[in-house]
Length: 475
Image (cartoon, rainbow, N blue to C red; front, side, top):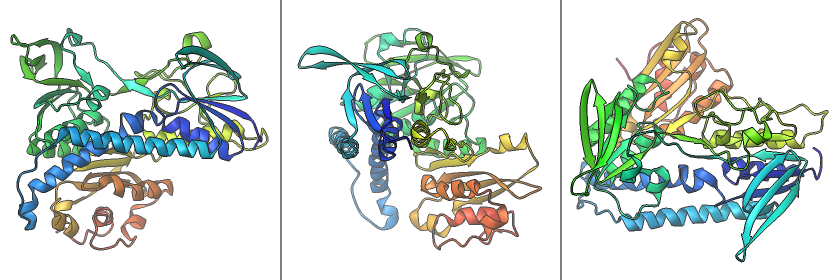
């Protein structure tokens, strides 16, 4: 490592602060610039607050089902102000923890807006005691980690009804009794379950013919069925034509086309949840000459070393426009920090996207790694193993029998190409599949790995066994 190399990190989200901490541990002299709250999207407006509210909805659901477990109780009463206060408290505590980690590594933390001029110069604009100031920072390397913001969608008059995005929702003080969610991706379905679980009426309008697009269709269909059973209305393949207020100004209306029929629905609130897009503030591609990805979410193009086309400039996380996941951002940050500090004679670290898990924290949860069945069929001859949680003893005692484990494998060589789980605790169980696929595990190896009993993870073994001699707990 090149000791005391000066590194400036622009953005204090999970990609930015991970890069800063790793670079500091490697001996660099680090400046971390954040324009708002440290922790970025994940901690403040994404992963943590959404999963916390999902947990509140899950607790309400458990209370409602208590009679099934021999426990007598009354219907739960939701204190929306209290659960939002808990959300704010937990986020604040975690934010404080990140600040302490940064301080412990002697990282200089600046609060202000950064503007990149080249790989050696960054200017930070800030307000100090009501006075504007600009500080120039000289660096040897710069790591861009400016994150993302909620995407918008061009719907006539949507602005006139003051529709919310996911960030707005997390700052709301009252819960709407009815909500239209535009977008059935990961953010949309998680938001739907929060509101539905807390007693609200929810309708999802999805433009495509599948919710959680990009996930295995069979798995997505199971999640859709479960959400509908819980009371969420889902309308797919819609073309939204406009929005308006009702005559009495009490309801918000969305007009859309579905199956060739013009329809309208109304609700107290509309939330647009059509994904996120890179934030390019302070890193203008036109001015700097940064190459961008040729994808719908035009982010900064990087190579496998997380280098941009500009000398000494790296980029990590959502600003790259691809794999916009918190755990991907932190993995990219490790790579960028190492490469920014390595000696020229040292082999660079490479970012490997082969085994990246994707998760949805609904109930049931959804998680997958590798190829979907549709993707795998285009490449090789495949075989598919399945095990339903209805046949799992642990799922039965939990009262969580919905869903299954699905494994896609190369029929000729037995290599596991994809693992898909929809069911309770799927997001925890997927780690086994990630490790296995990193090691190019085969169906036989997975099938004969001893799993503890009774556990939900036995479903992974049983799904593999279905392709290797037959599952034990299936006919």
